[in-house]
Image (tube, rainbow, N blue to C red; front, side):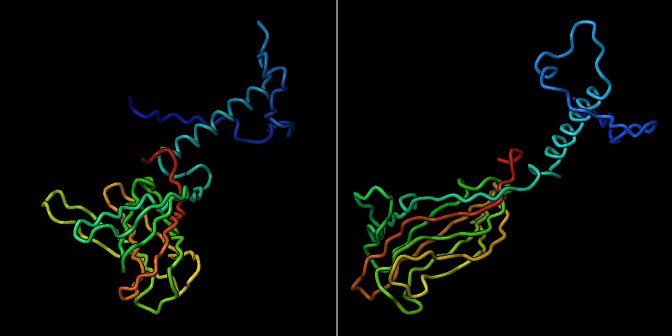
Length: 233
């Protein structure tokens, strides 16, 4: 079925030209509950109000499907993901991050420069704009530059047409700033539009103590993004 093209705006003026009286009046509660009685003619101002309201809702609905309006304003969402959601597999070097009996879902590094990865795509709807990433971590020690807990985000686009290995692009990189207590490693302001055909891999690299490793704790990650609404998936 083709999209209708008829104009459904109605009673768009605020008053009647003849006497400047209001041409739309909200129906009273009893009329809204019972409707008009049999044989009763609808009041012009009440009927104008109802049809005008329907027209406004139809305008808004059409704009939603045309992607020109998003729930009046695109809402910002913030979600948290526990550290235990990260992929820590390393077949060549054995365990690098381990869980504990603590129910808070953190991971603890057991080797220098331990790497953990999290694919953000399942958490972000297509069309969303990722605006901030924060990783909550407790460094095992205060370290100098190049030896700290590192956080980076990169996007990868698999090439199924050629086929070829995914091409990648770095989106941000940061570190713990030399902290020795719990800290939020922050991406700062981002503007990354999420695509369902792209993977977004967040990498956390534990600190390097030259063999005498001081355990780092990865508590979780917080994502802030605009929510594109029900049109996208």
